Image (cartoon, rainbow, N blue to C red; front, side, top):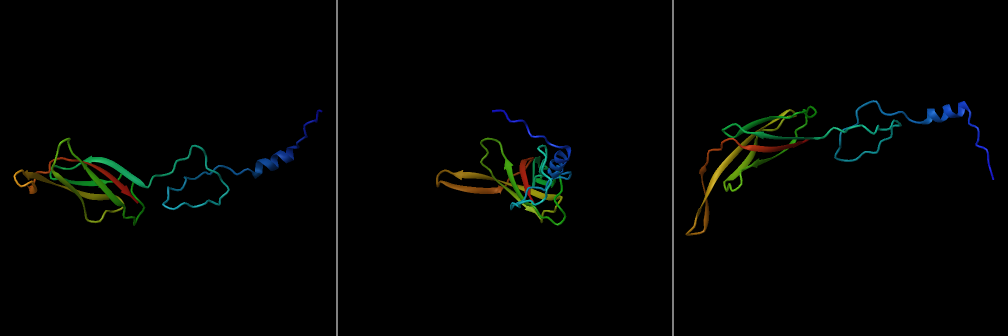
Length: 147
């Protein structure tokens, strides 16, 4: 059996079109630690991007082991980010390498210091002895800041 298609009026089409929310015209909120259910009518466009709360870099220290890391994008005013740093060493290096944060990081930068201590093994006794701090030299440091 054949049924004719219902006729849709121009007013009905306009009513349907006006009930469809428009895409958002502002930046999406940055990624948050806890999720939040939105309540606004505008929808997110498929090509939107959320800002990261993490800053990452791979930088070299000065020859004395110090580094001031200025983040590529500052955190909001008053934010004290959590910094994680790991030193990259060459294969086979057995020195003990320590990374420390000097002072309190700000929303724009953090000061890092790398300490390096040579270790030697006294084979007769099987003891590992840490010697006087070694020359730090230039070190690559992998850095992450979370705000």
